[in-house]
Length: 458
Image (cartoon, rainbow, N blue to C red; front, side, top):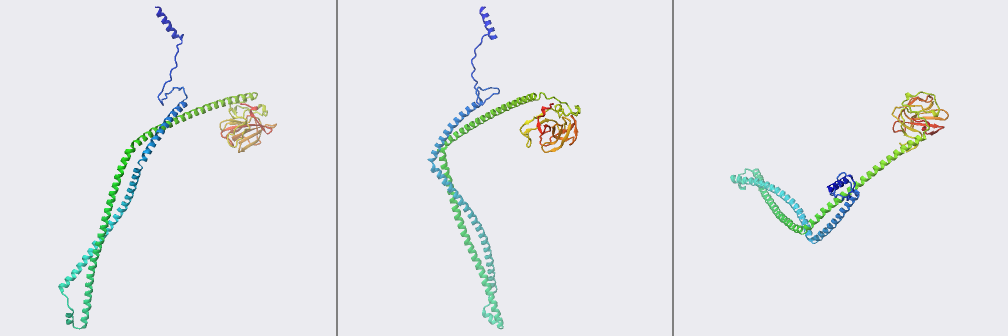
């Protein structure tokens, strides 16, 4: 019973945290390579870990490079022993190419011979036809002579009536003999032509047969070259095949190692870019924070600087009462309903080319067409256009005190007009050197521009 009570007290004490139970620091979880579960924070910097992996991959790559170089040297040495085989193969390839070129020329020559033989055969056919025609003509002549007989010269003399008959017969006989001679000559020539064409044909056939025989021999020689080359290649591949397979394996592993190194380099580059982006983001946030602080400080400084300047803001020009007030200490805000100061008085960076680097007034942000009022009563000294100021108005309030209203879209008063305090004199615009609608408001004392906020605030 006592032991049970003690056990219960110990359990209660542990539950309430009375006894601190020492807990050993857990060993870091070993994660698979490349596995990065979301939300897990590494003890080491990620870039350092990637760099370490890259160094290991680079080390493996260098080892593979050495193995590859050694195997390449081994293959090179093995190939040196069979330079004769390679030279033999190259010689056979060259011979085969030469023979194929020669055979191509021979094929063309054979084709030409066949064409010439075909022409000769046509010529022979024509010659035989002519010979047959001449033979037929000569045969008909002989048949005629046989059937009708031939008168002798004595018979002609005895049967002639006078000398004229004898002369006529002689002339006729001569013509007959010439005709018979020409007929026989034509047949003889035709027969001779046939014999010549036959000889030409026999010569062409002989050349063609010799060429075909030579072509067949060349073709067999090429087949022998190809067979010898195939035998040499089989022997060559059997001798160096294993070495080249090993080299290819090393090259494959090397390519994989190169890919691993490149992938890690890319990861490192991405990590560096991420860090740069984070640093840039942080720098931008800090710059923004500093700008806000500076803006707040500037606002506080302005508030302190212009603490004694009276506020004169109203919601619209219609709420103003027109007065003939020219006292600078009673100036009113020139843009009722809008207190946004886009740029203060003094040094600044040029917003656009052509703008002044020392701001001679304050820029009050406003909507296009908003009403601009005279801050004091006075006389309009200028109301017109200038390429820098755009449409602007200058009012003289006496004692060397003047105000200017720049970049207006429309002017509602003219030079020489007398205006009252609070009178609408122009509308907001963006004429001249200006990038957006606003009112540039200036205060000039004896020709020197001063900060308008020394005299008036919204």
